[in-house]
Amino acid sequence: MLRITELSLPLHHADEELPAAIRKRLRITPRDMVRFAVARRAHDARDKNDIQLVYSVDVTLRDEAPVLARMKKDRNVQRTPDTGYRFVTKVADYRGPRPVVIGAGPCGLFAGLILAQMGLKPIILDRGKVVRERTKDTWALWRRGVLDPESNVQFGEGGAGTFSDGKLYSRIKDPRHLDRKVLIEFVKAGAPREILTEAHPHIGTFRLVTMVESMRATIEALGGEYRFETRVDGIDVATDAAGTRRMRGLHLHNGGYIEAEQVVLAVGHSARDTFHMLHDAGVFVEAKPFSVGVRIEHPQSWIDNARFGPNAGNAILGAAEYHISHHAKNGRTAYSFCMCPGGTVVAATSEIGRVATNGMSQYSRNERNANSGMVVGIDPARDYPDGPLAGIALQREIEERAFVAGGSNYNAPAQLLGDFLAGRPSTKLGSVTPSYRPGVTMTDLALCLPDFAVTAMREALVQFGREIPGYDHPDAVLTGVETRTSAPVRTTRGDDFQSLNTLGLYPAGEGAGYAGGILSAAVDGIKVAEAVALACIGRLTDK
Ligand code: FAD
Image 1 (cartoon, protein in one colour):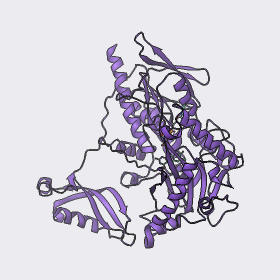
Image 2 (image 1 turned 30 degrees about the vertical axis):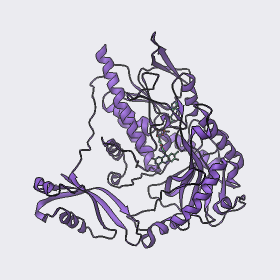
Image 3 (image 1 turned 90 degrees about the vertical axis):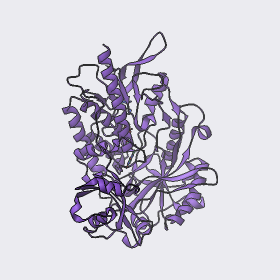
Image 4 (image 1 turned 120 degrees about the vertical axis):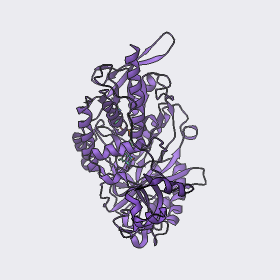
């Protein structure tokens, strides 16, 4: 099979134009082509009056060799890559020590799934509740301002991405195409098939809930086991005469203990107590950069019009997205983060007395507003130099200020963009209705954020208004604070995926500092599961 990439056709092309374009590109007749399938579809809206659909297509020919020979200088015509997943090992009737996965977010889920598919019967622990129960607890914060610190947007089955836009793209380079394995498993679990071909696929929050349940059923059917409401509060490490540290077991919050020699640590970026526990237990952790800022909301129609012009509202294009960044004069970079077209801003805290925001949407992406994080990068050397856990302290401080500025009731502090630029507190809303629940309190967001971040955002917002007309409209609403952009700590691992100083501990996913987003966390879960599986098999053959 051949893959043609970068095959552009106008947005409003007829169905038959695609096979015709394939034939023209390959210089073949209709008889030469057996079939074709779209491998990927993106759009190019740089000229909004002439938007192009950009296809990658897989083509089966009667005789491929002469066409390949003729097109050998065309880098957009190649053999279709083999994206099939191959297990590194499979075991029948495994009786060795069971691998344990801490965390049932995308990383832990995929680590668990792959381990189960290889026959290794993992045990998956999560501090939060099963997804349906967790959904009720999450809504309790959004509707009534009642937070359960163990069952919320961050913690529980499905992890942080369950109530999200479910965007499934990442910028990772993946020669093994593990992202394809993730997408295929998601489709098996109930995701729409077009995630396999869309360049910017998304799932939306409701489907994610049922998908997570379906994946649990698969893992359990393969001999895996889940334990919810089971928080790991300590690790048991054996140190030998040479000083080598090895995992022996896990201490649970309820006083329980699990023997565990191979442990996937997939706890996400909000497990601050767990990071402290690991540090206290001597596991090597170090501070890492992350970003802080606010969420910004505009009517989705403004973004659609700015991006798609006369094609705004076209069903193929869907709700418009954006990715923007600006290097400010003070040396800081402000950028859009986790943009959610047609979605809502959500209360994303997991700690009492703190406020944090994020965004989510449904599959239809048809809510009134577009929202996005608008954040500024910060780093340990300049901004929190006081040790590996100092980033956590800074996050907490900013979230506490936001809680107070919001009225100490989980309302979020908010400000009109015009007032933010002018440096004056807001007292009332304009034409944009914010979506954050339980509610917003109009105030001055500069009270919550570091001065350099405020300065960089002010400069960037004006610049973004030049790139997306209307972006700097004075009525756009900023809601604070965005602090959980990534983990403030890295639990560093070696080439063998194990902690630098604790064998048998496999830090993974976003919380360990090795992923950013659902897809990359899931891919990292697969990689780590493979390393764990080989270690489990190695132990069997050693004995
Ligand atoms: P997590 O998903 O955070 O999972 C960690 C799990 O570990 C949790 O279930 C937690 O309960 C559990 N845990 C933590 N500590 C312990 C412990 N001590 N013992 C037992 N269990 C523990 N990304 C995208 O790619 N696209 C999006 O559209 C998107 N939208 C988002 C919207 C929101 C509201 C949020 C909060 C995040 C969003 N993200 C999105 C980010 C994405 O969710 C994360 O990148 C991803 O979930 C990270 O996966 P993970 O498995 O590494 O960690």
